[in-house]
Image (cartoon, rainbow, N blue to C red; front, side):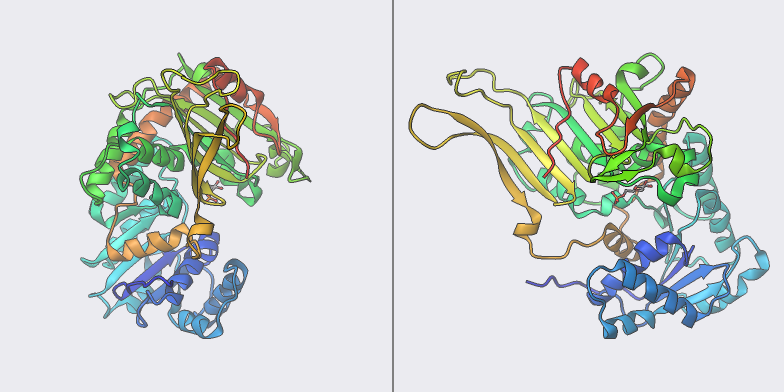
Length: 492
Ligand code: BG6
């Protein structure tokens, strides 16, 4: 069965950083896919902005190359041509006031349509570019601005960016993207929790013993070393993606699937996180940094060699944080958050570990009861597994076995899995900010992250080394062992 897609209203999407990596790898391939599915009207325009001297034709050939590289299945010549015709290019140095008139001219006369400015630039440019867009009178009533993560590198810088943008844009015009919220399986978490009666009565500290959220990557920092070394795993992954996942697992049922209701509930979770400071930093966190090793059998460099600066760095490429949520639903249920680069596999999981049954009626020798577990695999091989105790078939006594009810998306739905950006870009055009971060969420997340960064600084200890291709430093295993738990690593 082919899905039917409703076309979105005609739009002009202006991409600052139009020749950059994000545009070429994610935004333009995503828009091409939406075009193939008939969601873009013929008169919609995508206007790439950069300082290079390109014209429409040279820009189109650049994008064509990118599509061949990043759109995995065969690109269709006719559809390609249709898509390329929507592409335009304007040379513009956003910081130069006298550079703006060509963009003005391109947009003029299209004031009635949706206008999106996508700032695929560094965070230091978000405020200044937004201000220039406003001062050059390019904002219409129907304009939106999308900004990428990271929004700042701590609470103060995030608030400064939000303030600067807020001077020229209303909050409902600002779309702070966190691409994890566009992932199918992340959205499926909402369906699983709120479209099934099964889980909600058990979704609390009475039935759930602890939760693990792991985003493991097998890649290193590659050519992003400059950015990454100033950021580290906590800022790069936990402050945004992983805290968003935690919010979706932990939030109360929103009254409706709308932007205010969902984001209000996420905010309450963020504000209920127990602070981690110098007093509990050692029991609640682990930092690591990869050294040379082998990933999938291939030798790879350590972090410092990959950076190539020849010096030392205390940036963490791995971290574990034991988060606790001080509210009625989750009191006493730790959420173990873990992420790292150059780990053994590329795999993101949420594991909900249920409590043991209060009493076993079975023969302990042949029928040990393993507590139920719900595994949500976000990537790759998206799916849901619910581990349950079942009788092993056959005579010779009653033997129990722990086996999963297995919902594999690939086997169940014969569809291509869209990239997160496809959904999110269409949401911006449709004016639906539900899956974007609100200003207060960003601040609340930094409010919890800042003391961790400060406590790490105060400790002054270097991140623990771990060999590339492993599951991280031994200290992460020890952190779990102290709580009588272990990491649930199921590689399929
Ligand atoms: C980005 C981080 O936001 O997410 C990267 O900056 C990380 O460091 C990436 O590799 C992971 O995204 P995904 O979709 O590949 O899991």
